[in-house]
Image (cartoon, rainbow, N blue to C red; front, side):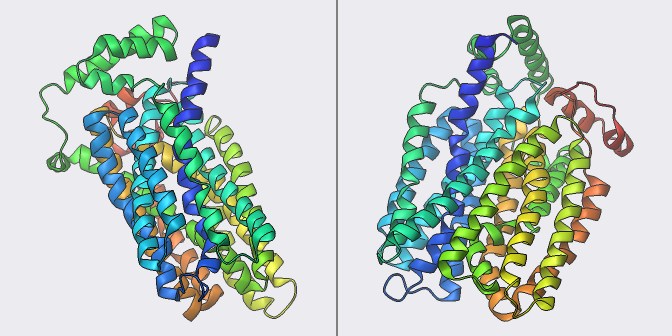
Length: 470
């Protein structure tokens, strides 16, 4: 790969994954802002309205995932990301100025539309811009930006709380910061090319080749365009992707695999920590400010673990990494259920809980999260990628919504131990299902994956050799 191609790929990755950064910041900032906006002098939130403020973004994300997939199929990945940047900006400013919980919930929903759209469109854009060798590393850069956004949210929450903690509107300062990367994303994407695979689906082969020449060596670009043309020719007799396509067994099978991956990621309970981490630490015994500072460790380990996950994706199979991450999370969840009972009332408890949330996030962000986002973005053929990812990510966000909505109630009524033990049991079931039904995808081009799914044999999908290294 020549230096100019590498530079173009790096630029495309950095700019487009600002959508992931916003995804992370907007989902993570509520962690520190909630305790302050819940005060009677501010939005006066109850446990129920607190859950609604946190989860309204997630409900919006579910809708945004479906709409984003369809819009990106019709108008292009680049155009859709520009629209999402605008929604990120409007949502951030609206939340900052919200005078009541109702208005806050409404603008959190708008932010959710942007987050959901980004969760589908950015990985689709990256997977279609990236070469086969190194696709895993490039696509999972988006996951790195998501956790970086969450870390920045936790860090800024702590800094702002320490500096402006006496100000009644401190939570507004936390929320407004998200407007800045939204501006950078919008103007950055104006200079980025459209996805070559999307251009090819529109019959714009010359434009597709020009884009490919910017992100591939010239001989590879021509070969890849020919492969795309051959694939489109195979699909030429097919009508535009619709929900009726789910009647085809091989397509339905892929969608069910994607749904299983989505649910398996969210029922780990990861977002109970990402959205309510400071409250978990306060429940364990930390003060409000100490909980916000301690929560930075959760953001920091997420970044470190994602780097490790990206490296591991280049060294081992997706399915193996995913299963290993699930086992690690199950152990951490069991300990989060047992340790609070054993250490109840001791000074060690809050530090033990913080250590276990860090352990949990190491396995989650280092194995499960990057693998799931990569696999969901690569298992669908080009014609179905927007629709398929939209369905799967819709399920992901709906699962996330119910976890985010119910967690404050569970924490208040069942307590820390029983809540996390419940998550552990659910994740044992998820582990068994993943081992049984999720195939290996590493080392295959998108077109090769499609051929394998069309000619489905479970033993072939589970045990194929890595045909392409990287």
